[in-house]
Image 1 (cartoon, rainbow, N blue to C red):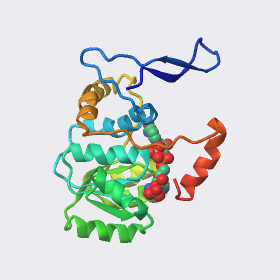
Image 2: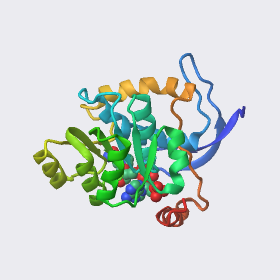
Image 3: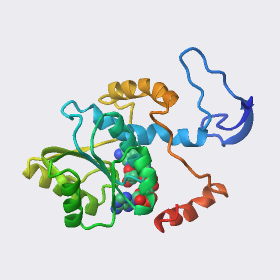
Image 4: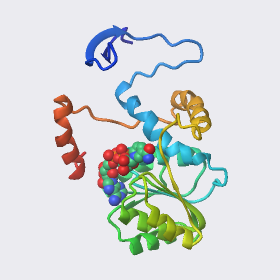
Length: 239
Ligand SMILES: NC(=O)c1ccc[n+]([C@@H]2O[C@H](COP(=O)([O-])OP(=O)(O)OC[C@H]3O[C@@H](n4cnc5c(N)ncnc54)[C@H](OP(=O)(O)O)[C@@H]3O)[C@@H](O)[C@H]2O)c1
């Protein structure tokens, strides 16, 4: 195991970031040293974006769940946590080239994310034998996915979205007896602290046992200048 590591440090408030070599810290009692820093740096945000709504007490277990955006960062945690929470079947939408990976995370079925809303409903109906889908996690939350999600969620069921302000969609769903819940991954907000503490308290054991893992990431060259090219690759379905 390496004893030293490169680290990005902020020596003073409002100062410039500097790269230094520092000692790898030694974990104390009850602490876990995770070496995949890059992947783990993304973990808290996406994990809590998914984990927060699981604290809603009325959500049941052993029920069908759909994750829209099963290939994105939030969606991958959604699949893992839905599996850990006992949802079944777990249906994910993604580009079909990603189907094997999504299934390895715990999705029981992967549907092409380009299916029309009607075609998606038909496929979901076949996979659930017509059992109502009580929980949908829309990790994309574009108007098109929200529309499909509202159609697919059962009356009395819950649709969770990740973008601020889809008020119209919430009104439409409420009119059909469905619930729309927005999630904000801020563990320090007073109404979320308890959930954050509960989720993060379980995190070391989940990582240690391999029940949850950081999503794979790719380090792009050229620092910030590499971002536009990376986004373009993601947009073109190559990332
Ligand atoms: N509320 C919060 O606190 C919070 C926190 C974090 C993120 N977010 C939001 O959550 C969303 C996801 O963020 P992220 O970082 O997880 O995204 P990301 O990893 O950058 O997502 C990229 C992937 O999304 C998939 N995708 C794109 N359009 C899709 C569609 N119509 N249906 C299904 N999959 C689709 C593509 O997968 P394929 O390869 O399968 O095509 C693409 O590879 C963003 O809108 C972000 O702003 C919210």
